[in-house]
Image (cartoon, rainbow, N blue to C red; front, side, top):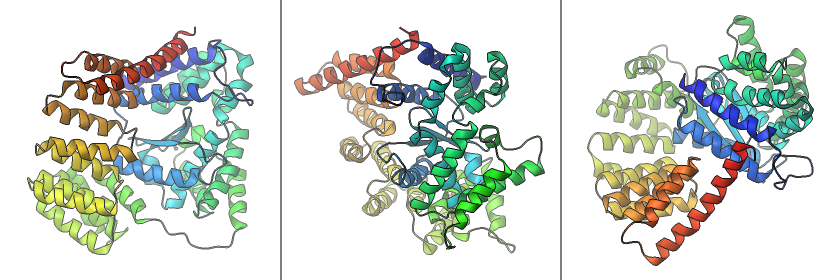
Length: 477
């Protein structure tokens, strides 16, 4: 029910966006959504995500996907775009591009891939929907169909993504027939996303066969289960011709094997280790490492370590992690090791692991967040704030870093700085109203100096302007 409410809330907001006769907001010559409108949409999506129980903000998995995305975007037709990937915890195989330069990827889709190139192929396809402006093009192409069709467009993309059962209801309610054929996943847009996505995939150095391989995998799933076939196929119809075209494109390149990265296998193991009960995950990874072993051993040792840590078996977890680390190198190992040591009360050892790992991966968000959180827990508040300021230089839009900063300031009774940091955390979550409230509290706090007050006033002015725009859009004025 909560997801239904979230979907409907965003649905009605988008209906108002596209039905309203807003003044020109810097709309480009090809009638794309303007940058300010894209930002407004992205804020609304981010705010809705924060309240959706299926949102999966695991920083290691999210950062891995965004590293792949950055690699693809650099070779796309619009490298200047800053596309962000977020993760949804779901057993449904699906991924979708969204307005605001966002891509949502379900955990089940990641698990369904067998190679990093297959996963990259999905992201390349969705990236091309964004770089080719398919959403805004669809809206402009369908303006003549009126408000109900626009409502269906909004419902199909957002409400149906977060709650697939709503798709049918939305299509019936609009009377628009197959709405999905009119949005970014129309045949024309799908073909264009396949073609340009393939070029992006190859240019980024992934296996040209990754796209066709994943398409065939989805088709096989459909043959095996005619009823519960992948949700991805509802949004991205699969045809024999489409698969053949992907294979033909790949065959134009000489064969050479493109190995998947270690982090790809660790992401898959991490997802498995975090599913279900710790006991079930432990049994799974023990089987993979048993007499009839299968899979990728280093990732299986990591997965077993994580599952054991979830079950508070810290000594055994560290033993498995040591085996994994003897086989390869990854920030995933250091982050898990530090977390296990901290959970076991060995805070000095945990801090040492964080510091050593950050020497190799200085901008790793999981390591940075972990170290700052540990410093706060061990009452080293000023050190935590300094570390947070450094981390924000490389991650200026990270809401969790601002949340941690607010916690540190609260322990020092620095009320103005606490509420100022909390305002930034809310802002980057997309909740501008809450951010404004925090800044107003900060402005009225005691012991606020001139420079802090000036900074608060400047941010408050900026937030109010953005909030006023969002409100104008929502009310259709």
